[in-house]
Image 1 (cartoon, rainbow, N blue to C red):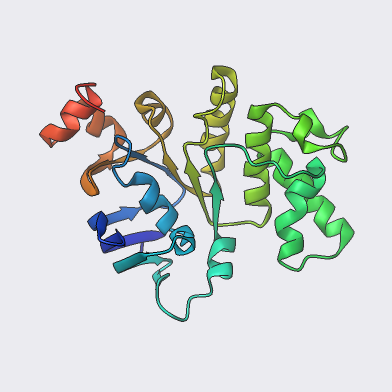
Image 2: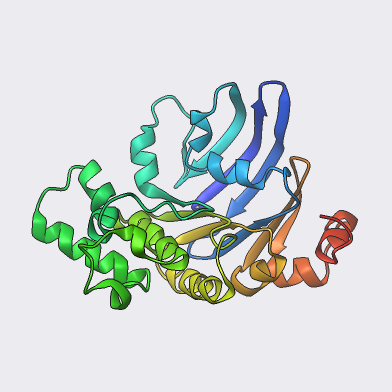
Length: 250
């Protein structure tokens, strides 16, 4: 059983067929990268894994996405419970206008946590896992907005993992960051695979090569090819993949 199993999945924005019959299995405690040019469907599929596309009007789907062998699009699915299991980190750091501590505690409070000691311990653990604790432990009750962009992105990761998800989705988490911050996030992603299944959308093929074990290449809503990252980059099976990874388009 795969943690994430996508079968014959189609998604439409109105009449626009954005994802076309996607079949893909994602392994546990690995980094899987989604690559492809803008508008190819990679972010759309990522958002489908925790039903973020539910928030967009006119979206319809067919097929299945199963997490732990449960179809997440069946009517009985509780979307709030799903999103506890499947965390999300967005392209732009989204630190809330509150303290560092309250940013990380936010999801815990939303999910009914009230014991102060338990919340503090979970916040501290999340900040340590996000490789941020040493930098902020003296100022966790100060505004999160004083943090740098790279620190804010690690704060967002801490907020996501504080509620202890199984899966972490990342939509171009380093595209707005400088090279030093990017390197820190990449190292963090590698460390987090000891605990989490991670799916990352990236335009940066070098990044995919550095941090992912598996890669899926999308083009115009189709999944063209997927497999071991090293093989996909060095000996792609499809001509479209070869042209993309060698920089002939995209």
